[in-house]
Image (cartoon, rainbow over all chains, first blue to last red; front, side, top):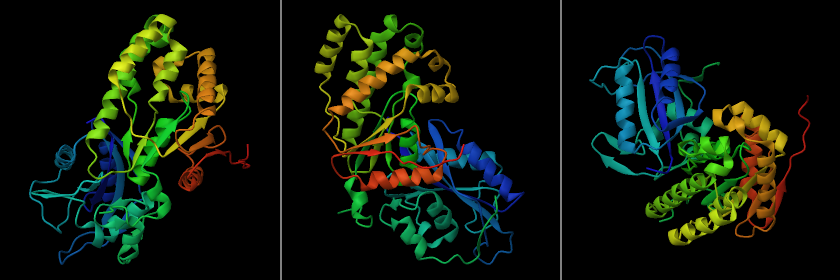
Length: 164
Length: 225
């Protein structure tokens, strides 16, 4: 792949010093092959979804330029999660040491096992849309719309900007 | 289907933006930044991959032709890849114009080499997509030298002032006559769009406003000392 593709990664953690985990994940993303971290959002604190009792999450979004294909990038993200101590089994709303979601990749739209692009959860998650709007307000997510507009459709309930 | 329906008319106008300018002026950094904030594909030069470049800066005369041919083939290949994957007509930002290749060839090659270069060019028959905006970053040689020193790429530290002066002149001449696309000429010495967020936002607004003709972007502001 000779062309660099823009990709946005949602980063989250609520275990074992979540803030440090998120920062560590950001610096590990910068070490992926043929990939550069271009933009990193401020950190947000968010209340967990669902009925499970668990600590608050720390969230951020990272904007990358990469020459990896979307599948290869996803594989790298999963490997990075594992390397950071996340177990194989993925509870949808359970606590986790690190969570790396491929939110959007270029203008790709696909729906296959394990990889849906853009990430279908974007539109309902303020902990994705707020940090994403901080770094790429004009981003037009294929099939979903402009980030600023999507952000306007969710509330900031349960979300708090972490002081740097 | 218009996939950019939700964006404003001014954004829809630019589908292919090219950033140009001499070595060290900051084109690649600006292009990357634009890619990430606008979610654009990056058509970016891989200078560091050119195995002749280090030799070139050590001994320009001896290594000019292979350096030049390597860049030409790399650019041809990249631009060909661009034409193939055109499904969604994405926004693209490049950090070079193909014409740059010839501009450098004219500065670095002798007559016989240049004739050979021309023959290779003609055989390749490259048709790059036409940009709908070119941003030309300008800065005096002193500023370029300072930025080259700051980014600290080993082999670039050998770049001579005289070479940068010739390049700066070649760029100025080239863009003086340039009419192929709207041209925004930016005084890159007075702004720092990479590290200063306000500078970036202002430049981005100027890029968006730019529709036709040529315009000098030279923000005068007091920045303290």
